[in-house]
Length: 206
Image 1 (tube, rainbow, N blue to C red):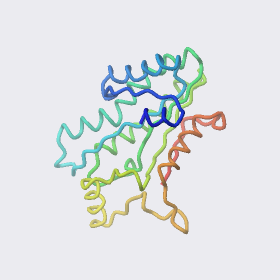
Image 2 (cartoon, rainbow, N blue to C red):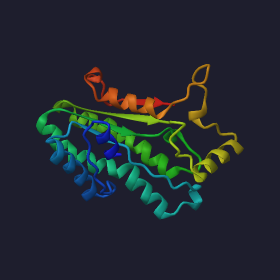
Image 3 (tube, helix red, strand yellow):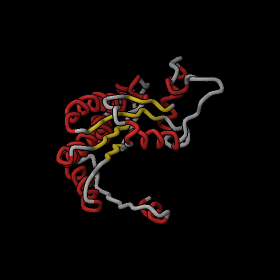
């Protein structure tokens, strides 16, 4: 991806540490600072799913999901915050999920993503006095390829039980369909001066 950006005339680097570890989160932030001299924007988009009904969910299913989908944002935010506080500016965008509203077979992922919402609201208050903003997006793009057979099973089981997936509820007529570009556009807008007064908020892209 970094090479594609460079080929298109942009500037980018790749850093392949696991942000699910303290060392990896710090390494990702440090790589940006070394390459560009500062860090102005942090978008936490890491996530992983391990679907299972709660009575079948293993410790590993739970811990891996928490580490990647929630704790990783703590590591990167903590590392970036010190630099953003020093420069008295910065924007953080965390990626939540409509699964946090309730998603059959996804207790681990739902808990992690809804925990990220409380985390976002609190760091917005922690960091606001330094000119740093933090918001959360709940995206559902229908073209991301994230519907694995395991996730499809959770949706099928929800349908069997008569539980409507919240992200499939019609929002307008004709039906609106979110694309990756719509999610990206909101991410970008939240990082611009046009959103200078927006912090501690939640946005949905369905």
